[in-house]
Amino acid sequence: MKPDCLLLKPLPQKAREALGHAFSVHEMWLADDPAALVSRLGAQCRFVVASGGAPCKADLIDQLPKLEIVGNFGVGYDSVDTAACAKRGIVVTNTPDVLNDEVADTTIALLLGAIRRMPQADAFVRAGKWPGGNFPLTGTLIGKRVGILGFGRIGQTIAKRLSGFNIAGISYHARSAKAGLPFRYYGNLTEMAADSDVLIVITPGGAATHHLVSRDVIEALGPQGCLVNVARGPVVDETALIDCLKTGKLGSAGLDVFEFEPKVPAELMALDNVALAPHVGSATTYTRDAMGMLVVDNLISWKEGKGPLTPVPETPVPPRTGR
Ligand code: 8YV
Image 1: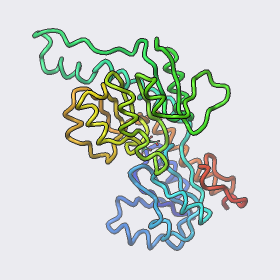
Image 2: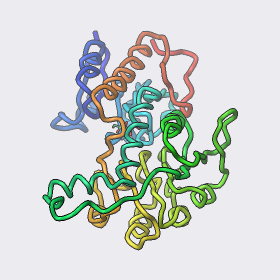
Image 3: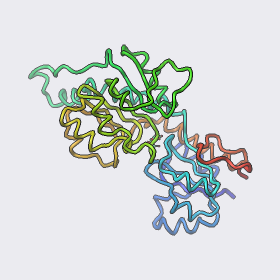
Image 4: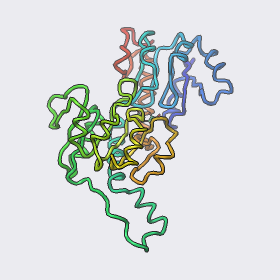
């Protein structure tokens, strides 16, 4: 008999089919009574698939006494309560690496979109305004100093992309300096922002980074500065960001994530100096398939007693790896 797997949110089709071959899948969002589904599965369910927007927090974990592994669809796993999992010896896996290139590409698109005002240029053409005169000249990426907040796998992939542009330099801020990298390290984020024209945010979400990009950091970036956030909305103080964009204390922003997404403040949408995207950093068929398959491969590997493929560091893998 296939073991039960509680799926909290839809997976891409390829991964969903693969999951169905190995598990008896229970789709939480389709259940007439999700609470009844959880209590029915509680006695035997060892597998859960979570993702951003479908959190796996203590209230759910507590109802699944046999839970062994949570496969998170996404590299960021702030929606999984890893502390509650670690306490119970539950392994959490995420989807690192397979989305590095896609998120880096999206970052460049948003950066150029914001600085070169591509959404506004598109709207200008569509509105039939071109015959009335040329679109206003924009800022440029040429010669700019770029600071990257968060220098893990995606941050470094972004730096690699940027190395092909005619910019003045790349620096980064992370918890500690990384050995052997040809980029300047700043131990202080505000200092890096003050020395940068562009600040790219690609650090994990969660309590440790909440509002790390504060009003001070945004103001240090300055009136010509551009902020790009492809990490998590709450890393940036959104109220301060909007205020700075409105009053000219910050030049522009490219945002893929928002503090209370999918709600985007009307004030932000009304601004002319922003490029906005609905959290699509990794959202291509190609990359989402790869992420989905990695979730499934982790669960299958665990089921076969071979241990998880990509466990997160907060939930140490117990010596007895699956059964
Ligand atoms: C997805 C992401 O939007 O991987 C992440 O951390 O933010 C994105 O790739 C998310 O995982 C989909 O729910």
